[in-house]
Image (tube, rainbow over all chains, first blue to last red; front, side, top):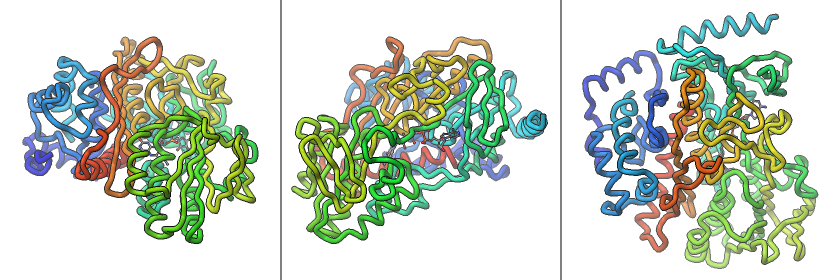
Length: 110
Length: 415
Ligand SMILES: Cc1cc2nc3c(=O)[nH]c(=O)nc-3n(C[C@H](O)[C@H](O)[C@H](O)COP(=O)(O)OP(=O)(O)OC[C@H]3O[C@@H](n4cnc5c(N)ncnc54)[C@H](O)[C@@H]3O)c2cc1C
């Protein structure tokens, strides 16, 4: 949960550029992601962990390994959660890895 | 015809706005601009596809969090969205009701007579309240005993009736049998109305008359009611005589198999079925809902039509905004693959529904789903409800997360 605030402004150059382009277009940051290549289950993550800042933890600053590790810990119960443990149990380690990788490429920007 | 010219003009404008990755040929029409249809239109268009969205209303008034509006905790404006962002994105918006679908020639007829052809149709009309299923409860009756199961004027009517009620009054909510839109919704509503009564009309009571013996997050709701609302909230299930068989709207009377209950404020949540267009086009079966292929969402009763959201038979998935949005993304992926001539990948879907028991007390139910035996089935071992006996801090966190979810999903769909 604390990662949300800590990494709030940590964007890559690419991310910053994309954000800038979106501002120039007058479009909001929440323009939908391209989900055409998303692995099974991945696109659903975005309806809670989206591009904006909300009460929910943002994934924006996390690496694929961070997300995969978290999913593994939620699945085994090593990490406590209100909800994610119930969801992580529905995905195998391989599925979770694919989701984590996609979230940090397609799913990150804008 | 003028239709063709109109369509051509519109599509060249949209083509300019669409991303340059368009390689796939095919014209997609989406019926319904709710959580399902608006999401589908956005994601399909984002993939570079040619998308027309048919929706008669200029504004979308969202049901999630509308129970908070009823309890005076929120403004209806926070529930109200427009399609401006979709138009900015380049989606062609047709502000009409679709009145007919000709499945053999793949053509939609609008209320104004204009016809629109499609290669793939995404159908997301939501629900129709079934005003024939419960004797005494028709549209006119809903002006006296609101359903408030489509957000807007009905939401405000129920709120005003509660505000006008004298302290010491009885509020009655009747809940239908499964399946229906938002399985935990009636019980969240009961909770938040009880919150309103506790703080404003403390001598009043709330009774839930239910057509079933079990409901979503039941043990969590029941425990919380006892703890927070004492005997202010009473629930009568099917075997206790809770099934409402008739309503007398003028007198605000609920008739059950066991007797009559008179309300000061009566909220009838009637039986439901898929939106009318799905029924009239023959895409729904005798249950009133549309069976689908769980990989592509293609209707079992009509090829080239994909049904998502409340109108489809979602298998294990509840009829929720979260489900409709998740299905829209999976469906968009499948439709794009089909138009490319590829095999659609088997999806996995997720649902999460938060409910508020009071403003700082949230509980949730979640599930993960995958195609099995022709349905979207629960993935075993996953999902379930919030922990029983969780501390207040966890309930408060889930109430916050509910807010976060609402902001994120409405941004994704309408922002
Ligand atoms: C009180 C309440 C609380 C809820 N709370 C939650 C919650 O907390 N979380 C959650 O996930 N879900 C919640 N829901 C459920 C959620 O509102 C629905 O599941 C969701 O709206 C379904 O989306 P949909 O796109 O299928 O239908 P809808 O959102 O109803 O959209 C259907 C759209 O289609 C249009 N349409 C219909 N027929 C036609 C036609 N012939 N031509 C053109 N357009 C047409 C309609 O105008 C409408 O805009 C709640 C529901 C209620 C009633």
